[in-house]
Length: 555
Ligand SMILES: Cc1ncc(C[n+]2csc(CCOP(=O)(O)OP(=O)(O)O)c2C)c(N)n1
Ligand SMILES: [Mg+2]
Image (cartoon, rainbow, N blue to C red):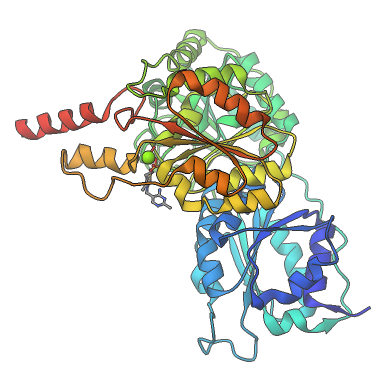
């Protein structure tokens, strides 16, 4: 049977296990769209409004499910819009395949209409970038792309599809399924050496994060950490990879790092880092551990050999997947109970922030949400100071998920919430957004409405680009420039898109409004009246400004 390149690609994707594709159409990949006509119900095309939103949805979908998020966009203008999601998937270690139209092979290199040299442009942004020039190589290259996106340190793969290749015909057979690739297990001697080092520790710490965790792997890690009574800290925005209700869990090493987390990392004498990359936020700009040889004895376990020794020379590197490693562990004993207890007590105490100087008080709101949201809730956020609430004022149980970008990309929260609702229509999905953050991708409300995806969006509306204003007040106090924002009526905007929308003026109004949002058959947007003063849980905007002015006066 002869197939077009589009058909061969789409049938292969179905066989690999792809169920949703997020995209914006383009004339450069009509043959793929045509093939999707025949796979509705198997591989559905979720029509998005901007490629940035589509790529965020695919990145979030990959992070949530572990199966590559699929994104389809047109060449030049389409893929440059989508690039924010490619960058985000890379920094997040999220599996993703992004298919992009390309000019015909008869004219490549001439700077033809919307042409891009994909390997040159995305070579360092994606995990792999490839162009399929010959139709019969679609199965080979697609299989490799799927494997590349999902194994080792997962990430995004960009696949360029020349138009003439897609429309040509072939006898080549589609793929029949993904390769089964067993996770690497730790070498037994290395594992025993790691446990011996841990057993001799005085203040051990486990740092955890990354992709490809299974339920069994996470359970095994928790059993080990609890039986050994070793404190656990999550890497930046991987709060949901370890049960926060466990007595060994002590918090997240992320932006706005709580002092006790900083202390746990700096004062630890042995750190067992499982499946994390050492990013800037997790290390507080590479200061908590010394580059290249940290004072802490570092045992770094990762599924990718490229991550081990990338920045920090470990005392011992172990090339193994997180689940095989966790399941091979057996408990160690030591005299560090007080060390762990102090970390846990400080984690619990962090939730007791003072009442906020704001009509809607997020300390009270998040306390209410912690008690109210179901255990399998999915929270999402983009970037801004508002992100502190879902990132530091929520306890993620074993079924809860956090979809938040390690890249700090504004606009990620709403698309991520839509992707989560598409994957799990029955679960409660709550997006935390800033007023600036929301307006990066708010047109995707239309995507949600069309796809019957019904997330609840909380806009923490403070009238400013708060994070930048905070930096501004610290470095250039009382000289506001480019950080004050005039916004539309968000509730009315939401209603125009077919969402439930309402303004929440005070804390007392929140619970009832949230109830109406939950009860709505459509998605909902709650526009929360937040004072610009309440920029961080423990320091107001004026306090920031006054401190900077006082420091300037002294200097
Ligand atoms: C796409 C993108 N553009 C710009 C930035 C820089 N940036 C980080 S936070 C921020 C302000 C966010 O404002 P808002 O969403 O209103 O949240 P707030 O800080 O006020 O809570 C900006 C502009 C970014 N991280 N991502
Ligand atoms: Mg704001």
